[in-house]
Length: 158
Image (cartoon, rainbow, N blue to C red; front, top):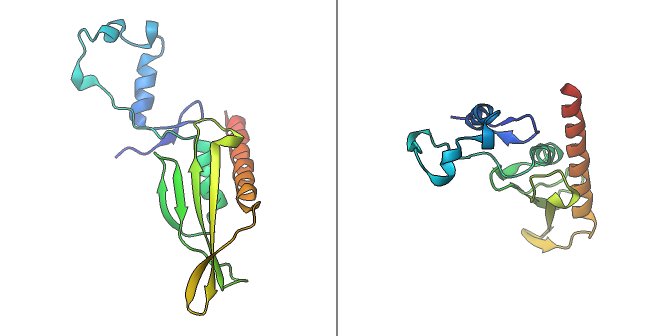
């Protein structure tokens, strides 16, 4: 089983991808020039790219920012995080659920979208309720701020 790690560009990749990148560095055209014509291609040596297709800082910042909520699913390859319902201790008769979509490999303001769902308890039935318009934007900004902090911290380590 391969576990994803951060490569030298701050992107998440697997050990296989990093090893392939090390082997290709320094080669003319970045690999075997004959590969463009499929001559002498050894199928056993083919490596399938399996890294996630979203920005690693946004991914980690998302998980950090919403860590107080229980996760329903997290897909690092598709860049989707969905929480389970969470009722704040101060308002037990309302609950929230988040869907976070990471849309980019770059750390960009438009690389993330948050959908907030809210329900209120009406007797014994949970009913959908409106959410303040700026709630999703505030969460997006918190995630972006955390992602920037992670990026700055990674640059200091190098």
